[in-house]
Image 1: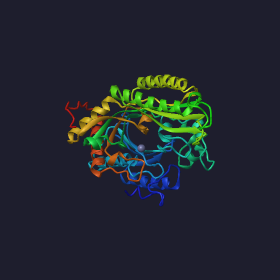
Image 2: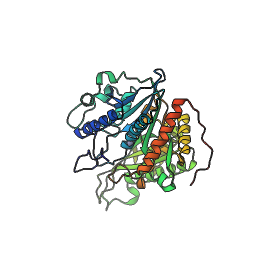
Image 3: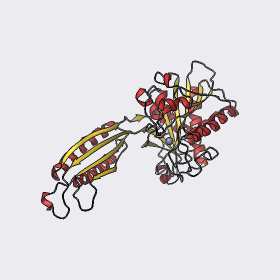
Image 4: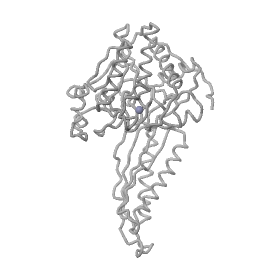
Length: 412
Ligand SMILES: [Zn+2]
């Protein structure tokens, strides 16, 4: 709550990455990290890191964290809950006098949300060597390059491209669910099975602009009729894939440009963007093939041309490490918290960290599933349950204890 008070005053809760407010929030966090006995630094990728040395210098690092930046008019919990939970775990280890074998790092990743430079997950990309010259040359609204902004917040654009962490043995991230499932089912915690891959398709239909009053129905080339058929086909195929239960699948058409978009003109050109997300890559490939075919058929039926069918962007799904998931389930059980496996339909820093280390995530319920809005809310006890579960998993991972969760039917 104290961190959320650091916001643009007329637009709660806004702490955009790279802004003075963001740096104020980070100064607040850095002071709390130091209070918790952590050594504070900012790495080449601009991530704020608090470090607690382990007893065995060869054991490597257990990393915990999330992000403190927000979307415009965002919430108090998205990202921040994960940073605070990580900090609290460091405090609890200190207060209980627990010496871990592994070094523990608490991380506030830089710019997880899409930044004003048009790039998200800047810090976690950088940490795994995925922040290249193309990214660093991206320009923000004030004409500043991302490289300059990175330097301004304490990163090192010259070294970040070559950055590779080889010491991370496990990464845990707590995050609010940002969806309604846990609350609806009255389950304490979601153990994330994987983070979806996101594929965006652009489809354009070209027809003919005719007078809406004089063009007879059988002579029209209406691009919007073709697009409408594709929208319903996308819905039908997505529902079919979601019902297969071989993985998580959702697809949305949230963007439709109609030209000329006038009440008395037959639509000449329509562009739509499809956002498809899945935890299982073969489902995405089948979906894209089905929509490819459906859009050709729709074009033909409406006597228009399918001018564009292209992948605008395409990321692979990431699996969370089964061993770490088992530690989390067992940790939750030890404290009597109910769990269920959940796929993450949103992207997270963990998806990038997965390139250098096994990762796992805990979702805590949030009210009404609302996120990226000022109403976003998670109960203190829910976050505490998630933090407790991660701390238990950290203790067991550090001790090298393999834990097999009890098989039980989860309460519905
Ligand atoms: Zn987030």
